[in-house]
Length: 121
Image 1 (tube, rainbow, N blue to C red):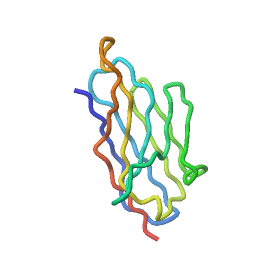
Image 2 (image 1 turned 120 degrees about the vertical axis):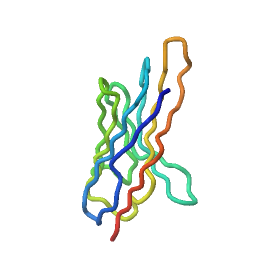
Image 3 (image 1 turned 30 degrees about the vertical axis):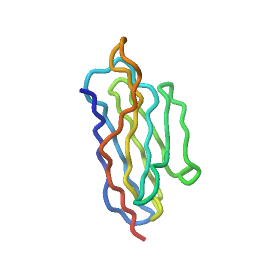
């Protein structure tokens, strides 16, 4: 069974840093794009940052220059380094990956369970 296992959320003060990590567990054939999304109560889940298997990255305008996404293809992990955190970064952060379980399977979207990030002012 394929799962995304997240870690690293917490409560910090504005200006501090956090690092989120996400690991793909289970047998897979290919892990394509990986990403981090953020959701706050009453709103949709928004893309924070994404990274392709080749290392091409994309960031939401609100986090450019403060957040850095990286991945380890061998260990099937993706991290999000968050610096200079602001109260508006608060939310539940979800790891995402598009995965092919084996060569005969269709590519599917997988989500982590979510990790809470709270930034106090």
